[in-house]
Length: 87
Image 1 (cartoon, helix red, strand yellow):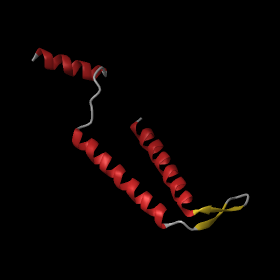
Image 2 (cartoon, one colour):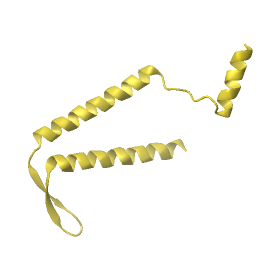
Image 3 (cartoon, one colour):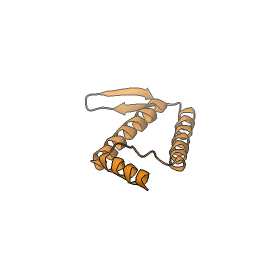
Image 4 (cartoon, helix red, strand yellow):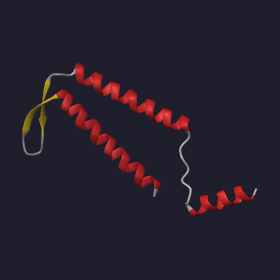
């Protein structure tokens, strides 16, 4: 009983970080693996070059590069939004 009160007090102070449940970690890992497999598949299927237009000019890039850059930018923006919501 005394040990439980001490644990709750430390938790309130922020001394003890609560680890995510193993089930949540497995779900995140599975989701990451699915997205990774889909991106790899898209990369293998889409080997053509595409024209990308910028504000200043145009260029020819492999479609797989365009897909990967878009995925990375989407992940970064999603992470920034998630961090901003936590605050």
